[in-house]
Length: 202
Image (cartoon, rainbow, N blue to C red; front, top):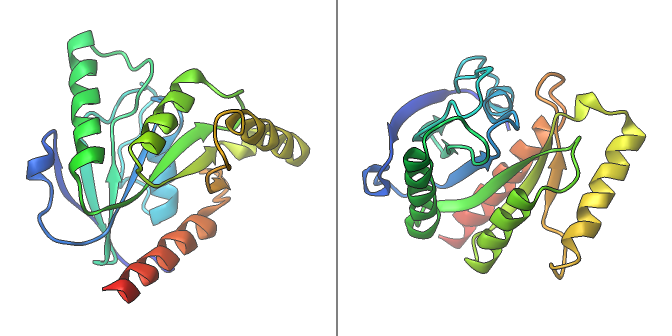
């Protein structure tokens, strides 16, 4: 897939105010320091589409970006140790779950995980929530440039083995690096193939 256009459409904290059309949506979410904004900018080939920051928790709204006028990339607030008040964090969780449970246009979520770390309970719990809620998702391992190839293989294998303790099979997953554009074509091909399947069903 060639990214020809990527434009910001709307930000809000209420699912009912999201775009009303039937364009398929792919939501990106992960812990607050996982490199989500950098990944979005790498995938779309736009340096400043999503706002990056040295301060975790920069994204605090549901952000819709229209890609190639064909599908929405949805940038969701991160979960984890973002330095926001407890009341704000509760509000995040509420409209995040509202988005996942009410948004009919959602085709798949991308759950971002830092490949350098062992499986974190907060990530595993969130993916369990998606699974129980029957919300399709793909794991995106980020920051692969920080490890050597053998270490990448080992970390991915360890993660998959951990998930198999509670899952019947390992969810679809990709390895990426924003700084080296690793995995970009894989993610875009997945979205392109999925959009084609959706179109065939209509």
